[in-house]
Length: 618
Image (cartoon, rainbow, N blue to C red; front, side, top):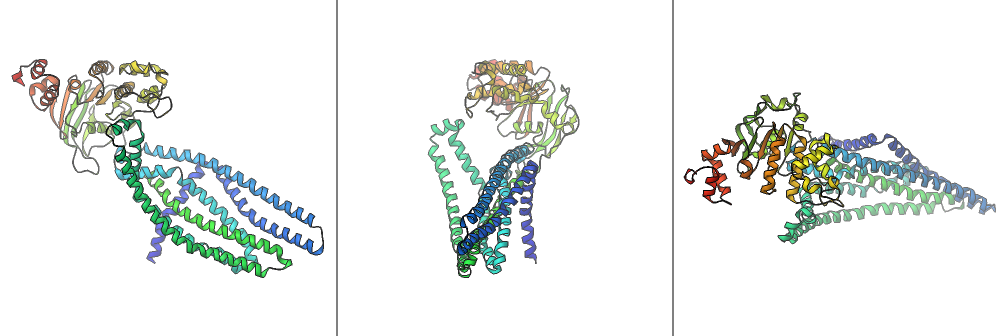
């Protein structure tokens, strides 16, 4: 009893997935779905009519020959009727294929929209989780094809079932036992298809991570962004070799599975062949009379059609089962919990009056044990530029993620002008932060779009876009492109213009300046820009962000020293705070880091003189 219940419980999710696919198609176009279903019913019924007409046509000609009648008239009448049925079958079949094609096109676009929309509603935590990322990749791989294959499979199984039922009705009316035997003959081979379909799904699911590695290896060897390093370090053979090893591993597993399925399918399929052959011999032996020639012709046709339809139905069910297993990946992704981060109703101030306070904030990334912050408390004063420095892993970028509420603190609170950050409207909070991340995006789109994305509501404002370009010094090279700001950047699309990494960084800075937000956060904003351009950009930043609150994360101390206030983080804790001069006088961690960096291009005396101190004060 329990085994049966378990099987039913395990089957229900698959049945539910099939129902959800049908519901998806219904939402895309109910009218087209109805047309497809109607045409499927008609084309399924036509073969039984063709069998009946074939029987009448052949028998009428035989009877005319036997009595010396007009065979031409009998042939023309019945032949014309068969031709009419063939034309109708072709007409309805073509119409059905056309309707299916339209439905597939509509559905492909719609399901991709849903997958993309879902991705925009997930948390950063989910993107940085390998298991969730596997779910996303499986959904992207299966999303465009599997649901339509399921819908098409349901239609074809339905069509073949209608055809089978109508033709079987004719066959069973002649001999019930032969009809039942033919109907059941394909069952053994389909059982093998179901079993090995399940095994194939299990194998493919278990190697999702390795499949992603194969795609990554392809990316490394086929994109302009990786070409120089792969070629100069002679990595090509190594990367191709790793891809080959994975592909051979996959092929070996798939070959074993395919061989087992083939060895099982041959003897089981032979059962169906022998049964249909025996039925044909039986038909020849029992209807070999002139009075039954029409029935013999129709009987032969019916045997072939019933066997073909039964095999198609059962094989279709096997394929349907396999596709439903795979489409579960799509629904597994669509059912992922969406962002749990919610906001309040408070509007973000047009200008910060007090500043941003981290009060006893602790944070540990999900799935890890080592905390990034443990009781961090610090103040980012309003209307000033605050730099955050520290070794890699000190938590600088994590602090930015918490400010943008891409993550929530494990404990403690973040206050903006004295109000908890959770009280602010989430969309309004993010709309009022102008940010450039160290790993900024290089959009393979026009220069205007690359900049305008910084304030999507002002995407059509060309004056504002050009002003942002001038503020970051990007206008100097963008205005010289063939199509000015309408030039496509990058090399992914035809006519695109590739930029240097320093030029891309200036474009990203333009995107941050485009927003003109009361809070500006710059994560390594000038890492790829020369010193002269850096000085020019920060001069512009002081004009653009006049009255705004700026947070600057940088490793280049020539950048950091321009800030009004400097926070020094070490292992997630604030160890020093003050202006550049104050921290140099303190002669602590900041002074040590500054001196080490400056020593790379100045002697010790120059560093001391530059800071207005004697060498002994260091």
